[in-house]
Length: 179
Image 1 (cartoon, rainbow, N blue to C red):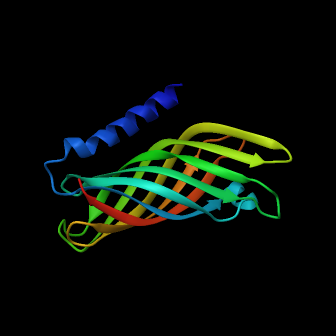
Image 2 (image 1 turned 90 degrees about the vertical axis):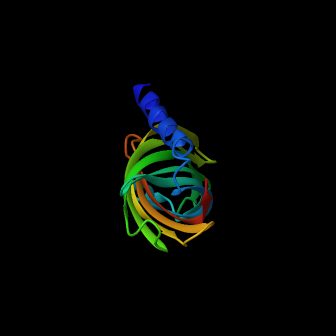
């Protein structure tokens, strides 16, 4: 329960950050789509899948930045096994912007914490689900110089499920607009 409360505080703080920073020019919100590549033990039983993402990102002060992600995705099982794995959750991240603030391409290196619900469904055996702490790290590009901008992110997410952690790499592309 403490983990869920801590994650709620982090995600809630990240969700409020765009409103608190609305007077600044470098706060964006939007969404995109992408692929989910399972790794580790999940990669041994699941194949590449898809996801949708809601994204908020921006500058805090100087090169310090933030990103808040909400993700929903699915992967199918390998070897002809029926069913799917559903991944739903979000992360709040702190990061460092590289490149000029008004540049056409900016790189954001980030890391953070959140929570994900992992549900594994195999029709002939049933399903199981757990909501657990998630840690992530990665990077993203913000592309464009005015109004709408494109983004591309790659992150490594590990969800503290047991007996094995659930790990995956979401690769996302989409569009954000100034908030």
